[in-house]
Length: 310
Image 1 (cartoon, rainbow, N blue to C red):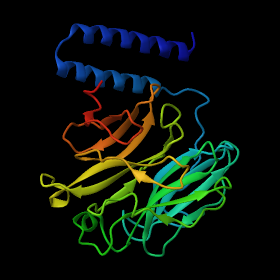
Image 2 (image 1 turned 120 degrees about the horizontal axis):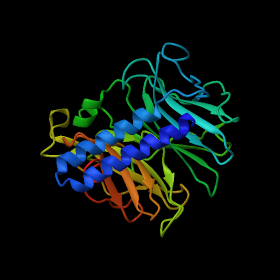
Image 3 (image 1 turned 90 degrees about the horizontal axis):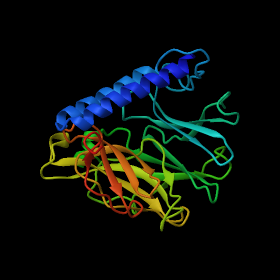
Image 4 (image 1 turned 180 degrees about the vertical axis):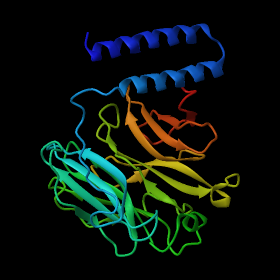
């Protein structure tokens, strides 16, 4: 019997035993504990060494290349099958001179192009890449954010900075080889009272079902005034929202904020057309937060703990 079959048998037995126990048990905390235990067991079983593993190619390495550090990666596949890998090129932390970088692969990741700079604004911060493909037009949209490189996140949250952090968008019609000049969406996709702003990090989606089929959606987050918040020593909190377009990017708008205490999110469309937002949570749940939308991202329900919502 090969290792793959043995692994599957292990998983089935563990799943069966834990499932029976959970059905028989009525204590909520115990259910949560064994759910987490099951996840860990399945993870370790999937990590067994096997011959013929996945090959690894390092696209950016700390201390090598044009920058000292590389962070906030994003990967997407174009309509032509080209892989586009984005990241931030940094010298230090989350502020300062940060450039938006790109490498392309036209052979399923076997080889990669030389590094390409999508946006370099001198000593300012250009980052948080979040691309989405319009499958109807083929255009590649790339969302990102900009702020003055001399100003830190806490200053922007408290709105003591000279300028806020702003959302921008650029696009490519030639499979990522060239990009349009970044366009600010600060007027249409940001409330004036917001301070911090970040797109993604990760990727956007295009809806495939329902009344809003074809809608382009980008997950994003922001800081806002909150009398009960303690972000940056208060009174501020993080919130999540989406940027979306129903006209293939001719115009962009935002959905209602998801609050309180969440940022850094990704969104997906479920088989029934409901959207699931998965968010980093600051709500003392020791788990990521989730929220659902039944109207294509315009409005989301209350924030649930990822563990207890199962």
